[in-house]
Amino acid sequence: MNLVSHFLVLLLLSFLVTNVFALRISLVKREHRALKDYAEAKASNPFGNKYSNPKNGLQAGNTIVIGGNVVSLGSYYIQMTAGTPAQNFTVLFDTGSSNLAIPVLGCKSCGKTRQFNPLDSVSFQNIHFGTPTCSICSPPDYFNDVNKCVFGRPILYETSNLCGFGITYDGGGSSLGGYLVSDRVCLDSLCISNMIFGLITQEIPANQFVTSPEDGIIGFAHEFNACNPTCSAPIFDRISKDLAIPNVFSYCLTLDNGGLLDLGFIDNEKYSGVLDWTPIEVKRWYNMYLLDIRIAGKSIGLPKYLYTTTNDVIGTFIDSGTNIILFNPYAYQTIAELFSTHYAYLPGISNGVLFGATGGGCISDNEMSNNITLFPDLEFLFPRYESSDTFVVSVPAPSYFIHYNKQWCLGLGVAAGIGTVLGDLFIQNFYVVHDKENSRVGLGKLTKC
Image (tube, rainbow, N blue to C red; front, side, top):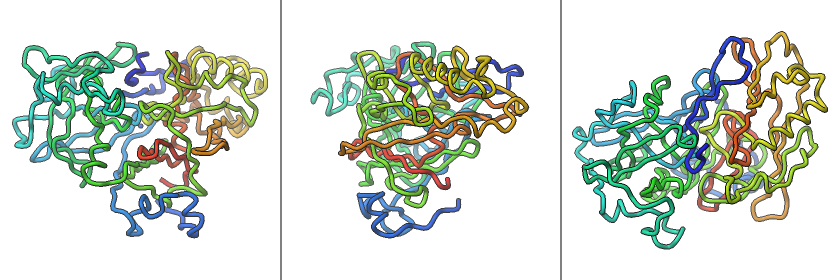
């Protein structure tokens, strides 16, 4: 897979006798508890009022409804508008990529999606090849020279003198291509002018969004991943800068009923206890220093460098655009062997059905019976932010399975070139906070979404 950018593949769960469903590793993700006392609130949210729940009148911010699910759709999406007057689009919500891209009118390979018409927007501007904007090919803080490129020189779009872009996925197995433009973009009431984004003129293979409600993709990761090869600031970085909103966003996802995205604040009502913070390892994805993987409290016994970013591995990161939990091949094999050794009495283990070559095996309701509660927790050990301490987060057995159409399908898979990808099945257990201002990720035990 080409993990310099992100995933766009269809993962068909192995051993599906009746072709129940497919999971997409995407381009490609209310009742509240009462606030605890002030001391606990300070412990869970050390920013104080700065990032607190806007319902308490402490900080302006927006909560956006996330649509989608894992089971029948395989992705999560939000609504946005582009242009003046506004043109409406549905875009994949993706914390594992950084670009905003929507199809342009006339894109023949874009399927039955809504397409942006530049002629209908009075605020639209093309970005021409050779201009200073097109020539930015590295983040400002990477080389301290935005014209020194991280992924090659800017490209000319065909013969039109426009600034082109090309994003590859799945090791070049799929891609989006087109040209960069500038226009007004809004997420709910948060609007910015002159947002640089991609207009898709070609999808390879064609019709990548045809079976889903999404028209395009919106990425929330770091700017490094938005260099394709011209760099453009991710949308929430622009919102934070232009509207003076803290560069922090938080979200929760449910397995079958969307979620909520909090822009510019942390909602203390969505989680219990305190937030556990861990530092961001590399500012590309939301790479985290995973120290160990445990099964029911026992380490799987692998060195931590297998989970971190190295010369040819992108490490461990949390990603709303990946449905399941992915491990590198050796970690996956080790987990499968440990299950076989210690949990052979559980259905689907001794016969190798659940842990197939690529994961994702399924067993019937009758086979599973009441045994789901006997499957062990998966545990992930992280360093605590600005501390020598560590903390563990647990994913209980029901959360790493998908129950659909009277089948239980294992939501653990394998992919080369990664440490671990903590996708939607992991995320559904937590209120997740991405704090770019302090280069850290927070995880709180989700209470309601």
